[in-house]
Amino acid sequence: MKKPLGFSLVELMVALAMSAAIITVMMDSFSSLNGSFMFNTNQLELNQNLRMSLGLIKRDVQNAGVFGSFSFHDQSSAASYMETTSASNNCSTAEWCNFDLSTVGVRSASSFTELAANLDSGLTLVGGSDVLRLQYGSDKVAYVSTATIKSDCATAPGNNYLYDLSFTNQGLDLSASRYMLASTNHAYLLKLSSASTLVSPLTLACPGSPPTVAVESAIGGLSYDPDVSSMQLVNFYTRYYFVGTKSGVTGLYTKTLQANGSLSSAKLISNLVTRINFMYKVNTLSANVNSYPSTASRYRYLPTSAMESTPAYFGQLSAVTISISGSSTQAVDSNMAKLTQTQSDSVAWR
Image (cartoon, rainbow, N blue to C red; front, side, top):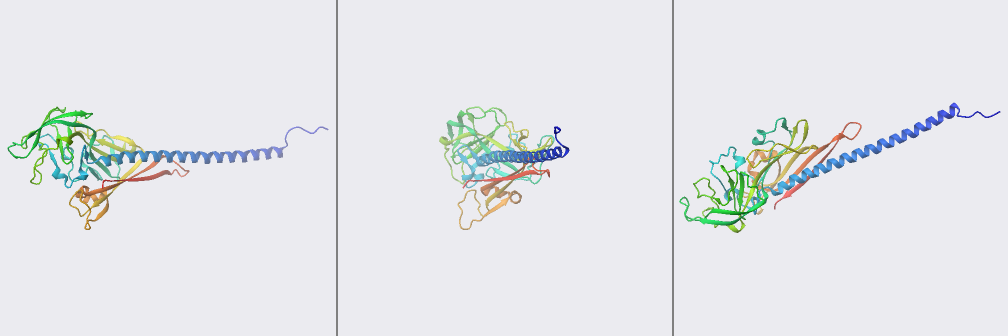
């Protein structure tokens, strides 16, 4: 008799069991590899987003308080080194028109009145995250090429003032409404009230004759000659960084004071950022912005909440630590947990 061809029932069941075991092992391996791939992808995306966002904020913090050849971090008293135009220049919000003299271009808060009043439709701020405001000058400049010095102003005879200034423009935005005129040791905010375009030569009147900018005027009873050789004109910028939610998208946003004096629409930088916070190194005993630390000086490290209670501390900064937190948009495990990460970096001026 011939032996019957094919598999017996027992053989078939053994084969099926072995195939099922192999398939199970393969599925488990694929699931593990896919999980590792998704985790690494989410981690890389989150890390890159946080690094990019942190780099943008750090760059602007480094530039804060710097206007051409002038830096407020090098001055002993910002208020003594700055003049502004007349109050009759249609400036509706003082903080938008004038440099915040109680800071060195850096200030954070839980919210800012001018920002909260100009949020986009559907945009809300996320609680627990700080709002950062930075003021700085553009990297494009207009150099003063010619100037007339006047010393016969009726209100302050004998003091020297720049009168007619002509500029050699190196990419400056001439349609802006705010400029900073700066030398190596003085800075003056120009707020143009009527003309939407800067004209050259720019005529600056004597004190008391709007628009008034008493360039290199008497400070502390002393008269200074204008340092024309280092005089530069730069655009004046104010920028806000904050974590908000707009149209269901939560992330890091920015708003910038535009050339026409209004705040721009919120621009999304990263939808993975969930929080930004700041820690400040402050000389709480110094009355100057840049006094050399003496044995009596005492430095403290304060968060934004403590800085808000004593705004004068923002004028005593020597370093800022920026912390930025975020989470992945997708879950990374079976419990639907999202990957979280925090990155920090510091900026020191002295």
